[in-house]
Image (cartoon, rainbow, N blue to C red; front, side):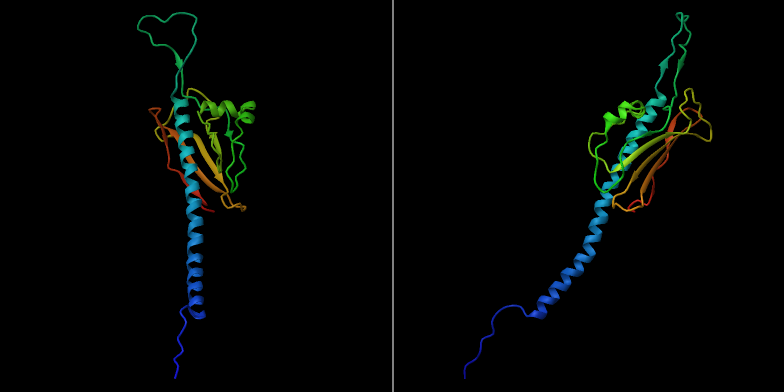
Amino acid sequence: MLKTKRTEGFTLIELMIVVAIIGILAAVAIPAYMNFTKQSKTSEASVNLGAIYQGARAYFEGEMGTVTMKLPTIGAALESSATCVIDNTATTNITPGPAAQLIDWNALNQGAEGPRWAALMFQVQEPVYFNYTATPNEGGMCDIMGTAAGLALYTLTANGNLDGDATLSTFNIFVGVNQDNQVFRGPVEATNELE
């Protein structure tokens, strides 16, 4: 009696089990990967808002000597003006979306936005996912004196739309000045961080 030798290989059931396992792993891994990539893109907002804050602080603390018609007497302090915020809101020209875009600095520099961003020392050359706004709460004034409770100077905002839907993610930093005229900032506050 001849024995039939079983051919080596996988049965259809074994292959279906493997396909089902791969499908389950993909269903778990793909959304986790998408969230991870979105989260990595949101770090741009924190970094750039921090850079705008540093520029706003330097602009506020910078001193500009006031021109006088005579030399100061020996021992007298020079009159100076300082503690300024930009004259109005500065906004970049990005429409938030899932693709990174270059900020058109040439267009901004031809309008009022360019000098405001220059005063805040903010200019990025790489593509960005977020639109940035710096809103002075003191309406473009100089010689600002802080208060014990803290006086609001700026609201710095980054708006993004990483998944392309109607919901925006928003990151804010609030900037203030205390009674010693020291500039301080709050933490980055996120709304709909990953939408």
